[in-house]
Image 1 (spheres, rainbow, N blue to C red):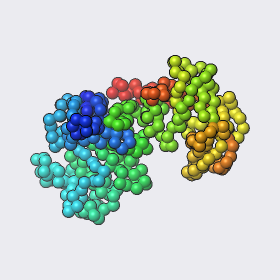
Image 2: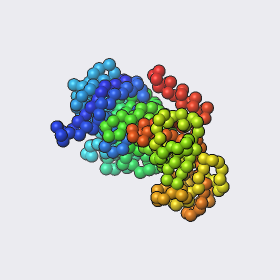
Image 3: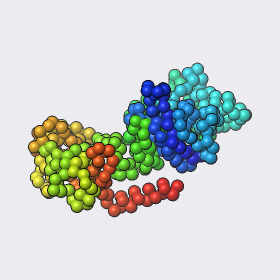
Image 4: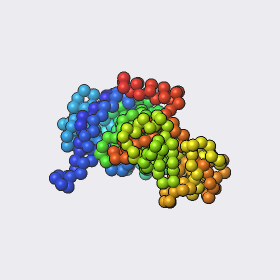
Length: 388
């Protein structure tokens, strides 16, 4: 096991005016035994950053530290890491057992008996003992991924690097493999970096998230920190499905006004504004309330535009009654609630659930309020990570 420290890592591709900055001055420390997820959209730099840790890419600037050693000049084989790729990367002409043992035979002085023992133990851990004599062509995608993970386990590495390992699997199998990888990491207690563009994987798997966009670090924190305390509008919009609703408007006399919506701001929210009179208001679909009659001064009338039944929940898309444009926002409701297109509803934004973002920088200027239990639990997690 080992900690990982990234000091001002920059990676550029190309030279001069045609160069592309894939990773832009990223600094980060990952604790020994921690499961950290690099998450962001395509092109955000997450895979490039992982490949830099692995030594498959040479950083343009900065240092990679694994344990207490700066590994900039070390080859991938000398960094004591194991990597699992999206495409499994199994040798098609070898059995599962041969795939799992090949790296050990080529790079270690272990005896055949020691290698066989490691392979057997890893196969038992992954539940693939009966597949050891099969070739990759005789296995399903999920079975191939288990072999690829088993091949990483037998290396007994200091660090696991998993680059979108579940992308080729169907939805049901992805869910099962998420659980398997979580269990595996808990059992092995190995420092693990996991790359994904899937925010559901990120939220359910990581001890901490590293949120990236266009090569720049946006936020580092626990999944709940990033979800409930987003550092900026990008993080707020990227995490959560459906994503947070955003409304850009101006403030007059303590009221936020935008197309078709007047929202009275509480004193707590107003105190966050400073001298701004234009802001972006954000609220998550699950926090918005729908009523058949006016319920409070924070409500407004809206018309149902689209209803998406999802089973236990439904996503209801609405547009304000007085809005001139066709732009809609989404509300999460109970699946059994009878809502049809064209219904007139009264929408309420609970003030304690509202976020505000700077209209120019996108930085968060006001965070939602959590209940006392959730606030305490979130604070405990933050303090735990700071002291780790």
